Image 1: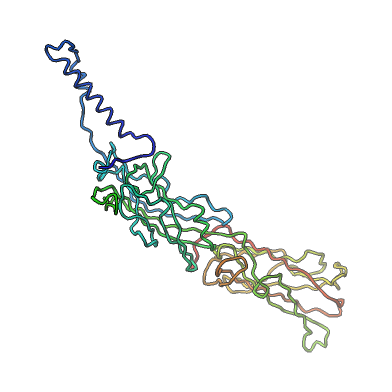
Image 2: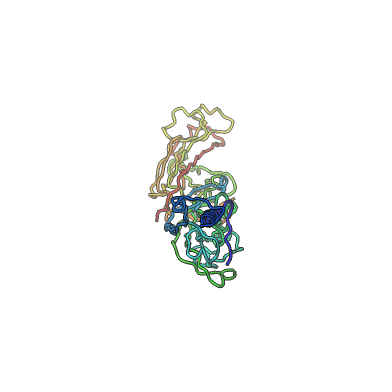
Length: 416
């Protein structure tokens, strides 16, 4: 027979002491009341009846099954200190308690939270038997998380029995419990090195203690109380890695020519041009954002007489206020959700929704991002309308096109 131990005050021992003291007082009083006794004490019958030992009904309250859904989003720069799956959830109780390995047989105050497998971490790997004095630490619960890109990582979760302010491993059978807590510490969350959606399914079971001859070695089977399951979705972002990716210039700002050419048959009096630039948008969350905002601007210099919505480049070193020193061009972009060409206005905003559809995205390798990432393709085209060469001053024309990319801050389930 082996006694239980708990963390802090043990009310079970106090109850037993009170019953012994009360019973001893009653026996002494009855002996003193026997005829011929010089120390007879007159104890009222009502007091004996009132204080006589009474039988106590054993009441066990089993825990309820748990089917928990966890859907959490966090950024790599703000990983939570811990992510709770179950936080001191009621794990069963007994009234009164129990004192040792035999007395605690099939009692809910000594329930344990264990796994279905000891080695396969697909749905959680941890002890599957009840050992009276288990030496397996609480942070030994292994669970596989799968990334949407088919990468997988095994994390070590902490699974404990909560008693007052202390906690021991949830499979340490010799400890009492008020509830169970299972959580992922920050050190483990940081192992999710890819941004995007990570998923896992945890399957555990609450078992009451059962006495057996191997309770100190290989453990006992226990009595099944309830199944505890959790579906876990972790949406990891890396906002610091948001970027506009230009495949032709992956490591530098692209330099683009307007490709101006004389029009055939125009006797070298007019010119126009068209050029395209491949562009792909990465949100720092493996393109799980369902909304994208794009804003296109040129350098904002004066452009008197320019058609509404157009952009401009200017002759180097010349007066930008003179139309002869300015060339105007148009910008269009392919809407990734429809495939249609969409004209862009200078300073105007474009908004796309449903941009998290995987069938429109492209796999790329991005600077500073581990592994293969998904981005949203949005090729742009710069078109210079026909203009008279005589209206422009010869020289080198330059300018800048500024693109402001803002993905949504909400993450939703990717569409198929």
